[in-house]
Image (cartoon, rainbow, N blue to C red):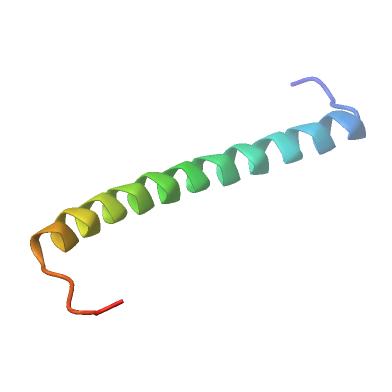
Amino acid sequence: MPQLSPLNWILLFTLFWTAILTLSVLIWWTKKIFFQSEASKHSLLEENKWNW
């Protein structure tokens, strides 16, 4: 295995954590949108009890 320069290690480190963070944000975003769509369907079935 060839030796990597310190700059390449830093770039690989940032690329790895950027990919992890991006993946977790995408998973969180899809679950959030799914939850909001379920909540909006549920709220359409219920009558609004607040008079404002």
